[in-house]
Image 1 (tube, rainbow, N blue to C red):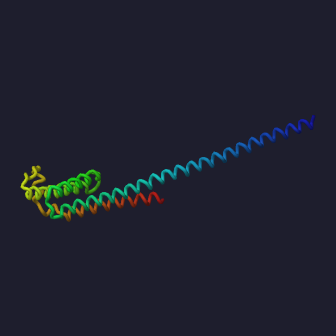
Image 2 (image 1 turned 90 degrees about the horizontal axis):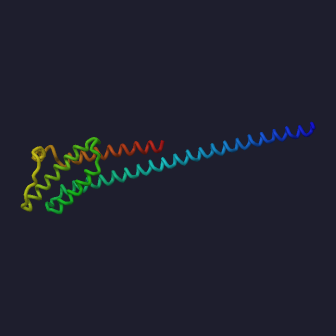
Image 3 (image 1 turned 30 degrees about the horizontal axis):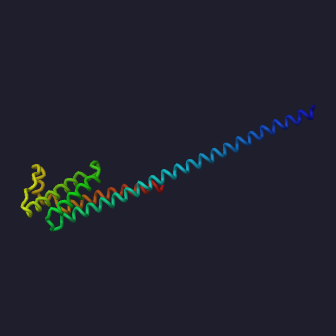
Length: 177
């Protein structure tokens, strides 16, 4: 009976040992799975951040292209309806791309409008059409050639593009951290 009791004690101890080993293995597997999930989540987050960075870079390039096309139409001597249509298209595209709460945007939008209206007046005079009816505030600013110019437009465009570039660099640094 002692022998049988001894066997039984070894069996119980062996069972506890096996249960402990199984618990330990399950815990390690869960910890490993949790680490894998954390790594996977971090990889997904990094992938999303990288994609946002790429989209922002594309947006900056597209905005730069639209700004260049706009000012090119302004500076060209072509005072036709087709140049006015191109100008309107670029004007609208730029306005849709900008966030009105960002620095310098309202000033740039005003520049866009004044330069577009100035071009429209030139086109209207060339084709003997009616001159656009604009409000008094814009008409006053339109007459002031020193306040609104292609140089001021370029200065504001550079400031906006620089701000966006700085924002992009901050995002890249955060991504690489």
